[in-house]
Length: 365
Ligand SMILES: Nc1nc2c(c(=O)[nH]1)N[C@H]1C(S)=C(S)[C@@H](COP(=O)(O)O)O[C@H]1N2
Ligand SMILES: [Mo]
Image 1 (cartoon, rainbow, N blue to C red):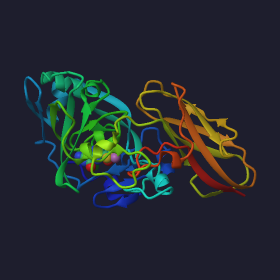
Image 2: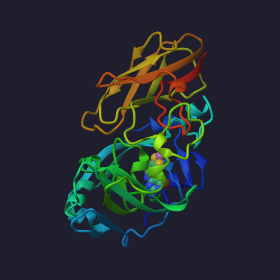
Image 3: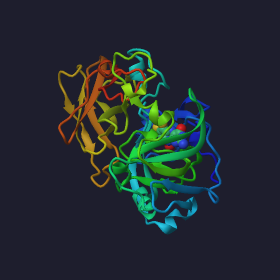
Image 4: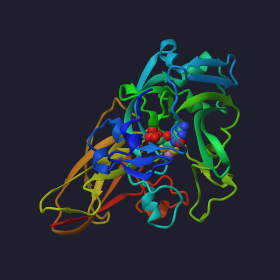
């Protein structure tokens, strides 16, 4: 079993809570490498990190399948073709702090660091489902059951979530046992996790123990109750979760990583850097404004066409006169869509999917 990773100790991370461990890297550290090092990768846990024995861990596959499977996790790569995908993992609550500044929200006040881009290696979920002879109707769901126990309003439950069959059969969805070329760090799901590129992180269970093909989404609070988007008039989490929209695909988003909010900068040109994500589509343009959106300057994109599930890094140099400024960023995707201007316009009681223009106040000497 690998040792608890550096991230688990919270080293150099902003720790929102130690138990369960919820921590994110500072923004400049996030922007330092296109593939986020494991020790700089945010950690989001709902319960204690389980310590599993990689040599003995098994994965069960059942439900609406012709042949239920019970496979050694360590043997997956021997039986199925290994695959690698470079993909963003991001929490639905990334940038929640900005929504909390509008009106109270529930959940940890993540800044812009509940996101990372990693090279995930494992096997394709579709290959495993086909080996089990899974029914493939589009109306079915693939549920993941994990090994960690979490305290919830519904009592102590094992973590679980599900994805629709059509997504489960997409080639980018992996059962991963490695992150950035090394065994999964314990806090990121050792020895096996799902990686569902493009979807909110909650749909990528860590410490994966079982997969079930079923005719409805997973039972349990993480699928049934949490991770739903409520309208702005809902100011208390309702008992009837059906009132909310299930969060799967993540929206177009961009954040400024440098300079930091509140930075005091020397006179002269200001280098601005950040990330943008357009899961499923491409980021085609990133705009920066220092006058509240009246004028926009285009950033230079670091394009990597071979990595459609990754983020796009961007960079611009702004000429700002001495004084106080607010730098704002917005991205555009290949469908010509862009982001809402104000956090006020996307506020929701659970603080999910904050994709408003990211704004950073700075002072130039
Ligand atoms: N078993 C398990 N899987 C889980 C979680 C969890 O608490 N338990 N948290 C989910 C959430 S909400 C997110 S955002 C991602 C975070 O993955 P990371 O900690 O590797 O960054 O894991 C997901 N998978
Ligand atoms: Mo999350």
